[in-house]
Length: 422
Image (cartoon, rainbow, N blue to C red; front, top):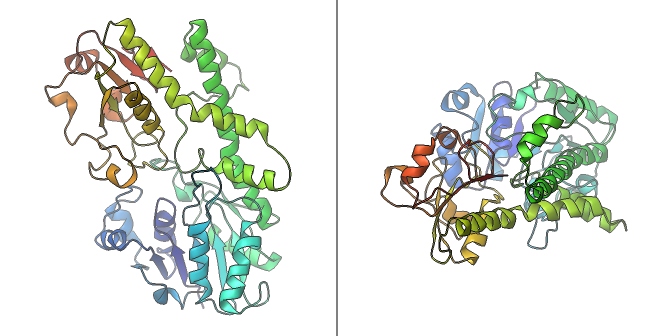
């Protein structure tokens, strides 16, 4: 008898997973957002990760908001967010609540697999006790667990789910093999079976921690080269000619992964009595980039004899990365906040985002019209996100909406007409 699969959470991670499983297995995707479920039932994915044709291809996939509808499933895959709180500590509320709901319908022989990014030990030390208490079943006798971390890259249409090698693990050797075979059935890139759940959890959390640390180095180098008066991009291009130079660029570090996951590792390290100075200092550097960019914007406005208080500044892009509508943990808001601290009036334009969407996340709103088709003039323009619509803009396009001398601050180093680029 073939397993029936439940995917808990239908966001950037859960939906593509549900679609792929739904092509081969009876699958139900569950999400607490009723509007999200209704949109998916109509064939629309607002995250733009799966198009209408892709949704239709999963002919064995259904959607629900009720855990009662997934009680006959034998495999539960949890893909809910694992954010941080205002103190930069792990917020395990979503994963705990999902686990509690699963525990009430858990049956003998069921497998619960977690994909959410966590610190080593969360599955077995936090989630398993919740499953045992709510179900009255015994771990590794009556039910089992697995961990297979997500590696989705939002907006990436080449490295999609099936083309990214998947780490798998299970709570017993037999279950580990079963979990591995399950994912092998949909992941064409193959799988890597880790020796334990904790190893798989640790592998995931260090993937993004490594990138965070390396990007922090690029950001620090950018600030040094800016002080020296040389072009960071030119330096990195020259250094990149060596075969083993890691090719990364400076910039804002936001999103649901790189700007969040290191804090999960920090929390576990500090719990064990170790202070991870390198990781913490990297986080500090990356978190300060919004202020650095805002300061440079004001400096160039001053150099152009522009009044700062009540100056009009246009910020292009609000998402955390280019060519996708994902605004989770975007650091563009740091630039906006800093500019407002200087007394600037800031407009934000992002064609990838529904004008109403930012109001759900931030105190900032965005323009519901294209500023390049309007009459308003700006004292400075900050190109914050390299959306394809912005990369193609010419100097004439920027000058058309510029109040006097063009002040163009290029965070992504994509415009040859920039007054300053990171």
